[in-house]
Length: 616
Image (cartoon, rainbow, N blue to C red; front, side, top):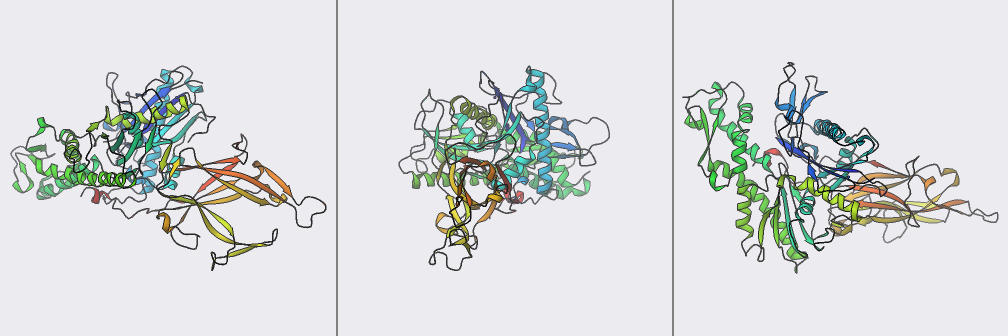
């Protein structure tokens, strides 16, 4: 969330993907794993357009996304090339290593069983360096294209997959995004499913349509059920009808499954291969296999086998055990279909869960459309499977149609920019509320109750002669609650020694993934973890003196009254400090509210999230 006094001239959406990164940009008044960029700018705030020119592409070439990969020099510290540059050899003899497929490794819950898989620390370094390359190039591109760009305010809006559930992790990644100019800022936008829904909302949906959105890309799948409540000529407004969910399901798992299948076959001819089977298999799943995978399910592509060249084998070489004939390996359609079917079954499970929740929690609502976006979501075979299942009245009695958004691989990044433009022009995002996936509270002292606080640690307050139970938890936001994206406020009153005004007061924010009825009441009970410490500058808040008259017997002190607003995202938290009179506290010279995040927990769930498990 960006401060209300921040008015960008350019808005740049960044969709950091598993194989490619996409960027869309927009400009406003005084806006492989691939990643996408889209942008728009003031004062027109035209529909966002994708950045299509990338380093190492000739002038006439266009690409909506850039490969999410880096090549480091042999010292493994300095970046030699990135994106499309990694595909060419500059002939300096320093090949280094290409780093890719590391998005999932940023999640502390993810287990990578690849022998050469990166550690989370390595993945974070690669993420930092890759985003820096994207940033440097994007800024240089705009500087060449727009006058006085150096003085413009630029906001980069990043999409975050729903599978990233720990706000500490998102905060940690946000710290890795470093910009050169104070006029450039990074924010976390909508989830990938929400952004795809915003993009799809321009495709003639009607008020009260209930849309089940499924965004499935290279590595993750996000789903959400949203109800369109705005009319055609109003700013887009959705009401969520459930908790947005995600799982690591995507096209990369097809690649990993195919890689394992090829490795098993190549083991039969290991002694005649020029390299290790795993390296040969990686070479084989690019090119022809990639094209076959993307078109799998089309009627024109119903050939029984996929024939792949095996690097190092000559024509005439045969090995039936390895499915090799005349130096080429055969993958049957059934073998590839099995790889798809394992992932499609997981998609069914996630979608069915959303549908069942809607029936239980909103029995009067009926799904109008299942909308697909993302590269894997737009797969012809995946779409056919989903159509066969969810067009069946036994599954969803009233479903009208299975739709694929226009430009499915750019839906997320375009939706991010569209939503931010609407917020700038109309003061409201497309999704003004969300269902929380975690419960959040604050550690506090509570007036001692001998029945409620039996066995709890207690302190005595000399100023009012009362006892307080310490390390108690006041829950502010409960899992499954619908909360406003404008934030939830908590009022605080603190008693301060006049000599200690310069010392910050610390509030401790905790989180729990337990159901509401099982939440602990104090930190002495299991189930809650510390998320962050909030350091409040007491010199910045309003204070009133107490016991300051000559006739007062008790010690003098100050009473400070202020509010802390918690802005809850699907997977992030942000905080604001407000006076009790409704004015936000800000300062140019000091930080009235500092957030000290706790270290990321290495495991947030018991769900299987390893590449071995993902590949089946």
